[in-house]
Image (cartoon, rainbow, N blue to C red; front, side, top):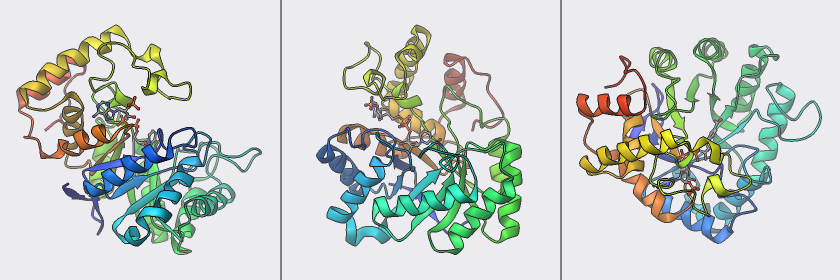
Length: 325
Ligand SMILES: NC(=O)c1ccc[n+]([C@@H]2O[C@H](COP(=O)([O-])OP(=O)(O)OC[C@H]3O[C@@H](n4cnc5c(N)ncnc54)[C@H](OP(=O)(O)O)[C@@H]3O)[C@@H](O)[C@H]2O)c1
C-alpha cells in the first residue's frame, strides 16, 4: 500500500481506505465482515471509516467494528486510523440529526461506547446543516477535538463556499480542518469545478467516497443484478433503476480500456480518482476478500495518458476539465 499526505498535516492516509457503510451491519455475517476487515488491514489499509448511522440497524457497523477491534486488533489500535461521523438522522426527536452542538457531542459519545474506544482519529460533520450557524457546528468539532474524543476534525459533502467558511472558522478556533469527504467517481464529477481547488488552496486533504459508484464501476452488473449485490439487497443504497442500459454500455466500454491498461474495471476507476494530487485516498466498500484484494492493487498502476483520460470523458459523457492530469 502507498500512503499519501493528508493536506498539509502530519497524517498519512493509505491510497485505498475501507468504509463500513454496507456489509458490516447486524444483518450481515460477523465472520465474513471480520475476514474482510482483517484482510484489508494485512494489505496495509490502515484507515477504516464509519458513521453513527451505518448498519443496518443504525449503529451496528460501529458495534461490529468494536467487536473486531476487541477480539482481534486491540494491540494494533495505534496502527489504525479510525473515523466516524454524525449529521444524518440517528435517534428520534429534535436532537438526533443535523449539526447542533447538542447532537454532535451526544453522538460522538455514543459512537465511542459502541466501538469501545477512548477516541476516534477523525470526527466528521456528515452533511451541511442549512439551519444551524456554522460557528456552532465548527465549535462543536473544536470541542470534540479539545476534549480528547477525536484527534482531527473533518467535514463531508460541504459545497466549495461552505468548505471555505468552515475551514476559516476552524482555523480561527485553532483546530484545523484536516479533511473533506465528498462523493467522486467517473459518473459524478461535482468536485472538479470548484471543491478540489478550494481544498488545494486551503491545504485540506480529500478522501472520496463511492469511487466505484457503489459497484457500478466494476464488472458486477455487466450481466444483470447478482443476487448478493448491493442493488439486490432491500437495504442497499444502490437502486436497480440506477443501473441503466446507458451506464451498463459505458462500463462495458470502459472495461475494454481498463484491460488494455492491464487493470480490472474497478482498479481503473480507483486509479482514476487517485490521479489528482489533491485526492488523498479512495474510500471503497467491499463485500468480499477478493474485492478488497483487487482494489488494494489499484494504486500501483501506470499513470493515465491524455488519450486514456479523453476516452474516459467521452465514454462517460463528460466534458474534460482542466483538473484531469
Ligand atoms: N460521507 C458520506 O456521506 C458517505 C456516503 C456514502 C459512503 N461513504 C463512505 O464511503 C465508503 C465507500 O462507499 P461505497 O461503499 O459506496 O463505495 P464503492 O467502493 O463505490 O462501492 C462499494 C461496492 O462496490 C462493489 N465492489 C467493491 N470492490 C469491487 C470489485 N473489486 N469488483 C466488483 N465490485 C466491487 C461492492 O458491491 P457489492 O456489495 O454489491 O459486492 C461494494 O460493496 C462507505 O463505506 C462509507 O464509509 C460516505
